[in-house]
Image (cartoon, rainbow, N blue to C red; front, side, top):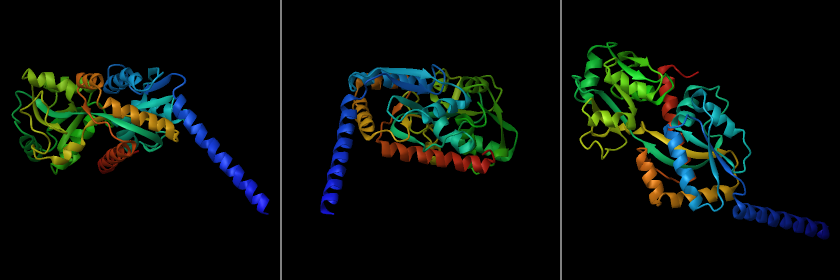
Length: 329
């Protein structure tokens, strides 16, 4: 009996030592081959630029790393996300996730093939400011003016979006909700993309819109558009534009674009730890900061736990909004 127990204890100890040794080898060796960054949107977009910025600077802090960005586009980001979900949990296939792939789409569509929390969070990377705006000649000079006009004339005003399950649509709808309005107080007009959303306001085809800041800022500076509020904070480029809280809609701060890096569920702890160390260095790296500034991003590197909490809050926000609007499928 005692010999059996002793033998079992020796075997258990040996197994534990082997496991620790394997983890140590993984940490020391990673990476031993190229790492693929799956970018679920087309080249030139926020996720593409953000992912490539991380990929370019990371080799400074992850020796031997070769990172290959791969654009896997389609289904509003779901194709790329599903590809990473089904990849091996070894740290060599990672997802440059976006608000669409891990907040809006899972909140709206229950048939995606994945859930927002079926991934290993590595870090939030950056936030992308949102601006709600009108044409410069518009009679609406503030958020309060616009809300009052919709309240007095339900259904007369319209706004531009790039589709039902998009951040542009959700931002405008949430703004109206915060103004104690219903989805029927303004009509959403769908366009092909975010650039078209801004052009629609410029051309007077719609009354207002909310969109990612980069396409809006130059037009506001040129006095072609009037920004009514910006999220989550004031921007140096537009010092006179109030943030959401100052405009009277503090909860609009939750409406913000973002990018995060994550992998398949079950990434080994040594791999996760490697990326935690990388992001700690990136947060202080002038090259990464400069690249982030060029794409209009607000640095937002966080721990895996804090990143998970942020994405969960974003999913909950859009799940509630999609349910109240009756667009969850």
